[in-house]
Image (cartoon, rainbow, N blue to C red; front, side, top):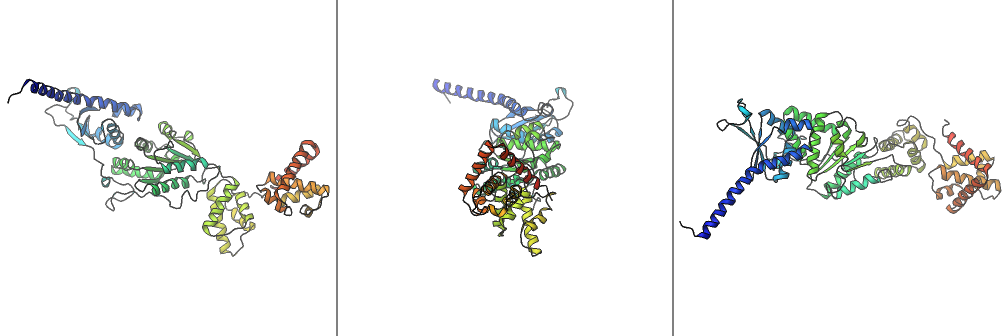
Length: 495
């Protein structure tokens, strides 16, 4: 075979490229590993980095396999159990999704420099390929019972539709809706919902999961309590399946962990959750956490976890105001198909202030007592039921109470406040009662007017303005108003 000059030049140039690429590839595995180490160092503490990553040596890298040399079999098993997720994601970030990780285990032959010898066998270990979901071990099911699938563990009764919005939860609910529309693509990742017991954190977390399942049927959603997560991990450690456990959680698109504060002082669990968190977050997966306190107050939690909890949005749920409590109770009544007098609803909501769960519990017990004892639902029955939930029942401030106290104090017949007489002493008593009713109760202007003989709201507004003007110009009148306010408040403490 003969070549002309042009052919020889092309052949030489082609051979040059082949050898140049081969040399570049030989160098590439070292450069890639150095980049991986820089990323790994950001995700583990200094001691773990020195112990488990500095001794690793890159061996070679081709299009499909990246081979690492580790000192011994124990070292390999430890990496597989504790750091496989971090290793694989870091390597794939630098090389590509299709690369496979393999290990060479150094044979312990006491040779100089502890390097593998050409004539010594070197054991090669390949990490499992989890591209097929059916190969993933699900910690929620018994092996062999059914194929790999994830039951979301969501309560389908908890939805946005029956989550009553108020000033106490508006931010958290809005963030939850935004996440449900674009899980993993908002700045609310993670979303940490925190607040006292019974304020709706779990309801909102389930609502997010249910909405995501509705809008994105292909996404894998999972709700788990921190206790369940810990128990699964303990079982995985006993069975030697930590790698499978971590890999399972890395395939979740929306992970909801309830009561994250119970991971406090559980070092091993926090370490595993830290790596799962990193992998999900880096993969654009959504994380929702609930807690009874803000991230900064999570004692017993590793600082690196707390810092990651702060990456997204921490939204607090506060105790609902009276109007929101009444709306929640009325929604529950409609759902249960029952009717309760308005004054009973107000009495319940006035006494149950800080816990929505207790509010619903009172309603359930109230209906049960009325049914079993064949009693009419009234304030007396509500008072008996509420004693099971609170140690001290507040006496409700009502417009009627105010009318009676004002009439007694100013020495006028209480029934004259409802009449049409224009006698000055009666008018002053009536206007003062309207003012106190507006400032000391949650009644609307319309409701107050109705209690005063069916007067319209403009009359109530005029009365309130008159009392305010008199308080600014008449010191004695102002003292009378303050004395009445004190008397009304003291009446609440009387048994």
